[in-house]
Image 1: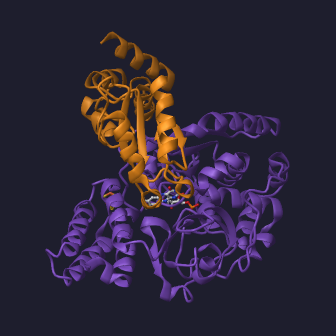
Image 2: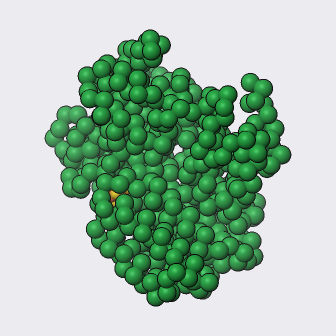
Image 3: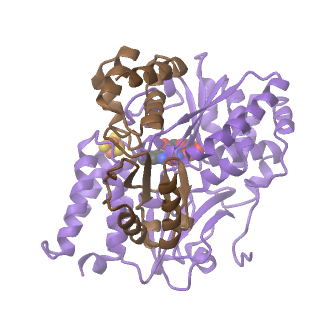
Length: 154
Length: 387
Ligand SMILES: Cc1cc2nc3c(=O)[nH]c(=O)nc-3n(C[C@H](O)[C@H](O)[C@H](O)COP(=O)(O)O)c2cc1C
Ligand code: SF4
């Protein structure tokens, strides 16, 4: 996969080739690809001159460094108690209905993945979710339909 | 907004603050003067553990190593806290200012902000603010720079030694202590790590002097604190309040009239039931808190609350030590079995023993603090665990 090679090379020249560059490079791959493939991990290992096991071990520790394919837009709905009390389940069901996927799955066109995540830090404005890096708060079924529809059009 | 029985404070978000002036004035003082002022103020860390900030800075300053670091802990992952996000959004220059003063005192040339991945949307504005702060330092000929490091969705990385591991490019697994960060932190060099809010208070103490801070609060809990308030309350949000109030006073102001319990300090904190509202002080002499306050009214099942916290711990445990990795799983299975009637109610006592064992044997604060919510919820709401 020449593109991955290119991407990893660019990230390594931007962040450096020390062990401290590993996580910024992994984050860079996520930003472009939304997940870190086996090829990407091997390539990073080669570039930083560490074993692929080290790269794999580090990547799999972090919940935002996905190692399985994800859609272009990763939706993370907060499942912690404050959001749960404000009707998180309703929001998750609404999204499942719209995208015809369950939590943990990716749509067939690889556009959306739906995940649940721990406290996002918006407890006073729950339910809350992230789509990639953007936060959405005070969600209602109606509001979430509008937001997802906008992303569908993107 | 009325605060009938609670004193509202406006030190953190007050915009009347010229960072350049404060830094100039502070640089005219000796490091001992700054440490004494902080000591006098009684400021304790706002990240949870409550270690006196002056001592942390002093111990690090005393280390002979030439390379030292100051780190701002912006990992804010404790369920129910969201105040560090607001502080970084509204008054970032004050956070940078606190870091710069800390750097002067300990002798650091580099500082880092470890920002949780969930707050990446703050990054562009923070970088821009940082650029103008670096300009101020350049004008004043101060040799100090701050870099922002992004987290990637791991609560445990808020634990200081796990945070260093993460910054060094590894899995966020806590280290053994000692050595403490003041001796061997980031890159095994002497390091000060402080919560976002602690750094702003330190800067405000440089601006106003110790008096203004010290006059607030109680002997054990000086000053004010930013609270993140959520759950069953008509006034969810962020409030800076004087320390030393009782849970009763708090509930009078923020409750919905039907509050049956308040969880103070998030999932790793303590649940205070209605019958203990009056006697419980929010602060280091009673229930300590990093600022997370969740209110529950009588429509809520405390079983669900505990279950939610345990799931949180089970998922966020780094898995490094057995008591925590297996303990969290067993506590969940255990309370589920009691609830379903597969186990006798007395099984809860076994589970409490397990939680107690975790408190003693787990390697870090995560595994050690699971017992806090477990005991305080199971003991006070036993019937809800069973029926
Ligand atoms: C599991 C765990 C998570 C933590 N998360 C945070 C956090 O998100 N932010 C924070 O400031 N401190 C957190 N702490 C506390 C830090 O280890 C450290 O004590 C704190 O940053 C010191 O700053 P302070 O002295 O200003 O409070 C956490 C501790 C543990 C055990
Ligand atoms: S107590 Fe839990 S989080 Fe802490 S080191 Fe052990 S397994 Fe990891």
